[in-house]
Image 1 (spheres, rainbow, N blue to C red):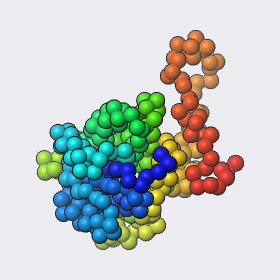
Image 2 (image 1 turned 135 degrees about the vertical axis):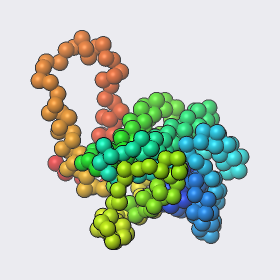
Image 3 (image 1 turned 90 degrees about the vertical axis):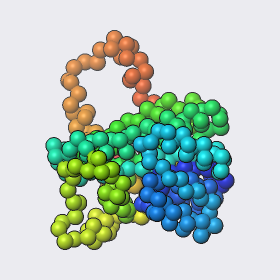
Length: 309
């Protein structure tokens, strides 16, 4: 996608954090934005702030787990702003704690919002984009926790790994329709994800094994990991660049390189030391097609710097 001015974007979880940063970056390019969120007051404040900047912004109160709500929201946005050409499935909730401590309610809540919300977004808008035939772009917010893990957040990690797989599969399926798909895998960002998770959690799913991310008596905003994190609008600008380049992966933290390399090395090292069977290669066909990844590896670095050797 080369130009953004006048185009319509729908952003879920758009009232704060990365979602609001996306909206701010998009309106800076002259886009019209539909900001969707389940928190009415926070949503009203966010859209009011965008409108004060002269942006065309529409507040859409939406629970991303509500499929009927998705259909109504899509109709309203396209009726009031025009066809959605950029869809950002960004709404998400967190979980911190040992995997074995996650309750059934934690699993239902985390997977329902993070994975179910993205599925609902894709199922609602992908057919519309295909039918319109003019291309478009879908961004799915996952996390670096969808690329690797060190434990301590298994419920969240599971949901984010699922989103990476969803985005990769969707990109392969939509390429022939000239619809780009990117998966955003940010590291820590200055947002209120932990607070918003508590605010939107249904009472029926209140039982949790999650623990505080900050030590007792310490505000999360005062922790080094938060203080050194980029802002939502900084991430929004990186997403704009990723959409322009039609990148599959949009990463925000170069510091994760050693972990990515270690994980890739571990995977390769685990392959059986057996000769490759050409009959299996022939039988697998498209299952062994590496072109989706090869195209990304051949692209120049996203930040215009040479890759380390």
